[in-house]
Amino acid sequence: MRKIITAVFALAVFLGASVATAAPLKLTPANPQPRVKPGLTVTYAYPSDVKSLHQAANSIRSMGKPGPLLSGLDYRVTDIGEKILTAERAERVAADIRGYVRFDAPGIYVIDFLTNDGVEATVGGQLVGRFDGRQTCQETFATEVEVPKAGWYPLHILYFQRNKTACLHMRSGAKGSRVTWMSNAAFGH
Image (tube, rainbow, N blue to C red; front, side):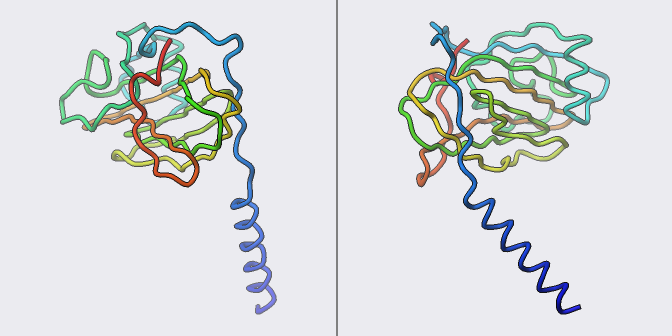
């Protein structure tokens, strides 16, 4: 029994060290760099219920329709009954969000999202945020990314909200500094 406990502890230390020293995900900038307009495009679907990213994606494919542009990704917690993002309703909404996010300088950044409910986000070809379930407005795991040069990076987010309140925020910060809300000016389409 003692050998098993020692082996489990050694494995946990090894895995912890591996995660701590994992290299940041290298983002790929848009090529060529686009001339963008402010905001992000969004396609909405309004299923009878949505509890997972899989259901959200299927809803977008089968019944999605373009919605009004999003100004960025800083949508505070709604009150019950308040519409989500730029959607037509307050509950049971799936959204496919696309566009670009701008980083003003190269370097290592930390990215996370606050979401209620599910989100799957890619930036520059890398998965940088994911939660597949229902929750109050909470953070995804922080992800370290390498931004090789200043400029625009492709952004794609699949999001869903089931009922009651909703939120969706993207935050970033240079490694070693605090993550902060990304301004609307950092997003374009």
